[in-house]
View 1 (cartoon, rainbow, N blue to C red):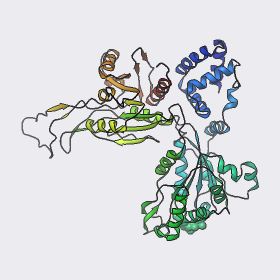
View 2: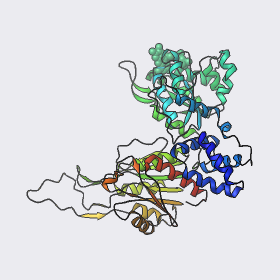
View 3: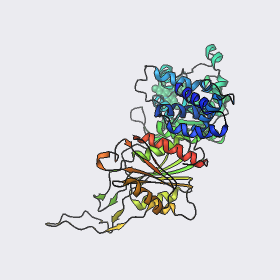
View 4: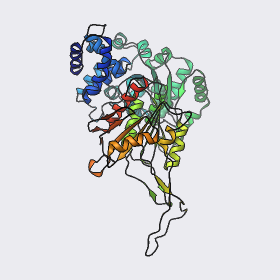
Length: 504
Ligand SMILES: Cc1cc2nc3c(=O)[nH]c(=O)nc-3n(C[C@H](O)[C@H](O)[C@H](O)COP(=O)(O)O)c2cc1C
């Protein structure tokens, strides 16, 4: 918060007029270093504002124009707690800090039932946190035979709840507050017993009482022996719960924990459950409600069944942009060529190989407010793809006839209908970077171009950092060298500002 106080004092010096505040708000955000920006991003997310609006709120407060003159006091307790937790060295040594682009903006109450799959629920806590959730846990009595409240509490970062008649927790939080102080209740593993209890409305333990008292969406991840799952009673209970509006993810088919048992009843994987949970959570952030299309990675243009034309694009920049847009609340479709980087959380990923497939997937993803074309699409493909492996010919290499691939950026930018409001391209150049990128922006008909120098000595292609020139119709702005994640964060802020009608 020290950094924010520094912002406050600059505000005091800057005068008190709202107009000046608004200008200073956006200028200040651009100049802040990455650490301060991260604090600001957390604070803005906590208050449901854009970063610029958050700075304005601080500035107004500093100038005495509103009730927000004590920014440190506005940060909700859970965020302050999150800061404190990160300083502790504890059993969560291998816990990745929450994704910086995904501040804790949702509350999830995770009820862990008494099944073997309870061990996976510990991983689920992390997966939910990766998606920006603050997780609270309840363990049933049976669950505590499989995992401990200590482990669940340590991973969640706050004590896990177990007893309905625990005077301390009733005084402290209480089962009704547990039921209400959340955006979503996830039951994983949802045992046959918990399904029966819920369908019958039983409230004889903490999990049952909370499930009955909550008015928030409930997501069940059933896990049980295939015969228990197929049992008429279980299916009857499930049908009742679905009719009551409860959502279900899984179960999957596969090996059971019990030796020799297989079939339908395996709990859905933590990533699947987290994705299903995210789909039920309200979107928040400066891009909430906006649909964003991002392309990423290279394309592979086949020559024959074993060979293809490709390039060195890693997909790191495009994937980082998709992740940052999703963390800002956007509904993101990522059309990705073949890459080794993992799918970003909270994003719909469409995997393609060729330029033609990428164009079709991009068109399919429309309408969208914003389209960012970060993929390095091959300019050419082989005219005739051989159905069988081309044999090495003695003496002379075979000539490949090439044809031009569709220009995805230009095609989308020139759409007469369905054109995204903001079409953003990338220019990977090795010479005259800015001049070439300016010409490319006009030729392609896009709104912005992010130009970067991909000469081998820059290490940008495949590397973790990037040096960007943002070229718009009216300006060229050179950003300092920074990580691809930071570039993505900066770009998403600019996109959000542009959608609000502010200049780039
Ligand atoms: C080793 C073992 C594994 C179990 N695994 C499951 C399971 O995967 N799913 C299930 O519905 N019940 C399972 N049970 C039975 C539940 O633990 C039991 O029905 C318990 O009452 C559930 O309590 P709860 O629903 O309050 O958590 C298992 C029991 C044992 C002893």
